[in-house]
Amino acid sequence: MKTAIFPGSFDPFTNGHHDVVLRAAGLFDRLIIAIGNNSTKQRHFPVPRMVAMIAELYRGNDNIFVTEYQGLTAHFAREVEAGYLVRGLRNTTDFEYENTIAAANRHLYAGPDGGGLETIFLITDPKLAAISSTIIREMLRYGADVAPFVPFSLDEA
Image (cartoon, rainbow, N blue to C red; front, side, top):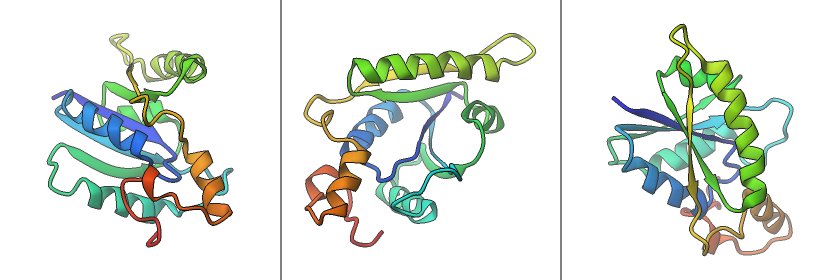
């Protein structure tokens, strides 16, 4: 069974993330959306609430699961027996950052057979690439309507 995780803070989960999930779900037997719980960051939306909202979005998709995790992504991947990480790329800056992380994760995950964690990069749909979670949080801070950029209502979050 090919299992992948799509890790991130997803604060909040955007239409770009949704696009990546829908495409990745067709590539793997099991896709785990894994929300990292970084205690050093102040979140806008609580992790348990975002887990519930994302899980509801994919209810009925039997190969998509949503959970939270703490610690290193590579260790979590090993724990859930995922051999792949999925990452969305919006631009070349994302690639430079993600490529470095992919190398570190591959090293950290390596098992006794020398196998590593493969990172699969999916290019974000250009129509969705300009908006990040950071931009959405800033828009929310000033009362702007973010409905066009997220796959569910954030009023409930």
